[in-house]
Length: 156
Image (cartoon, rainbow, N blue to C red; front, side, top):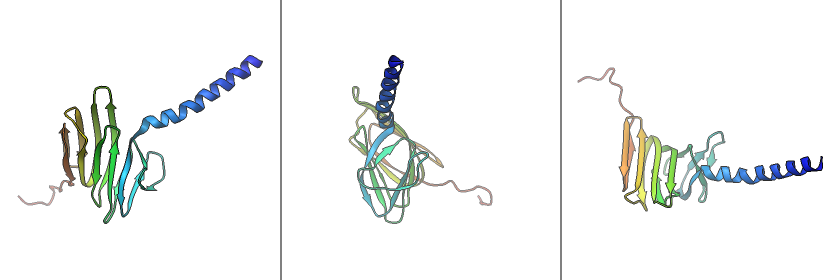
């Protein structure tokens, strides 16, 4: 009986120790600059007002509003800046510090973003928009998300 009790205590301790580690794996970056109003919404979480130091996680939706700007610093030291009235979901980021390779995938539903910072030739970024996708290899760039116009009713 005593052996079973000790085993349960060890398993509970290991489970509690592993939970922060699992949560840490979902973190992909941090908010470094916020001006005016900007929000973040992690999966299955309420909308939060963004502040400097906010931990950004996979699948988090970041939104800016009038006069709002946000800059994110990712684990690979690259940056993403959202202009006002923009919205993006950070789908995934994978960084291997041993090789210096990184891959970011994000979906821009509206607005303008600028990607860059400390990128290198092994950094790849893919931005999906309603009208197409943009791949950036080993550098930086700006992407504006423009919703495609409906062809119904348009004249040619």
